[in-house]
Image 1: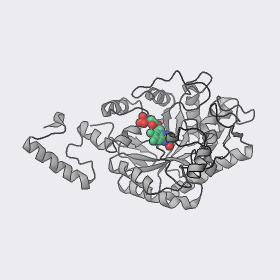
Image 2: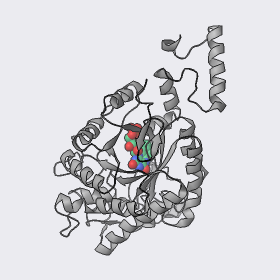
Image 3: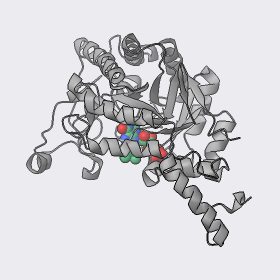
Length: 386
Ligand SMILES: Cc1cc2nc3c(=O)[nH]c(=O)nc-3n(C[C@H](O)[C@H](O)[C@H](O)COP(=O)(O)O)c2cc1C
């Protein structure tokens, strides 16, 4: 029996295992529209055995994109290509999810391989990609050298909260079964939550209760369109790793309020708020964010997803088995090996005959294993050589 490969239920959904594909922006969309790249990128994870596959950060309004290449769901015509992706994933017995996002002061940024700095003249001359004005809770730039965002008016706040709801309605039409709201890594909702980026004096800033209002109202807005039988998740940065920033105690209170607003699972990441101080307290090692998820789960009882520097399936098995988290999400390990779930199942002794693989590959791999074993040539899993 494997815990990692045991099913997990949220509302009416059953995930066949505890492995999620963490959202991974491809910066390959044009005007927010998905294309074949996204179908293949996400589709191969369905073939590889993951239980939940999240499409990348998808902007709820055009100016809420982080880069020119971000996906979007701010207009109905964007539904169609995404629906092909969701249908493919569902047909392969995985759950299609989507991450809804607004970049706030991180909007108008260059792609990672162009240094993640603000869009500049080179983008205009080489790619015809012009900068745009970013908005944020307060007019505090993301980092030194970044332009100042425009402080959001109350009308801006109401518009963006509604846009999350409308994009949720489009996500439903596209066939996604779970939404994750991107409220981590210094994106707009995190900017409201963190005192580092929110210095508002009105109902949307100041106390934690006020700073979390935007997140809670976003959840409420989504729940207006998102059916009761489908789960809603939030990705939070449990800590800013900075003195004066968010700490796990704050995040526990945020998670409690989100639960009240109809949120079922918290995907627990950390960091990303920016500012002039480097997050010196951050120490990266395998599973370094799991303790935050575990604390959040024991304090609130909310379902949690653990993420960040996970690659060893035995370690993942143990964090699920000991109840520290309910699901795990992987990004870079899956980029390196989209078949990580299937191969992990072999390593954990529950996929010896490739029965968890799609028949189109599993049948051949089973035959090959038998032949290799018979000929004494190569046997992939000596532990299970029974
Ligand atoms: C190519 C790439 C794109 C990413 N894009 C997103 C994104 O759109 N939304 C998000 O929440 N995190 C994004 N992340 C962060 C991952 O989801 C994940 O949290 C992080 O990479 C840590 O997990 P890992 O150690 O398994 O890679 C991205 C990471 C990578 C490698």
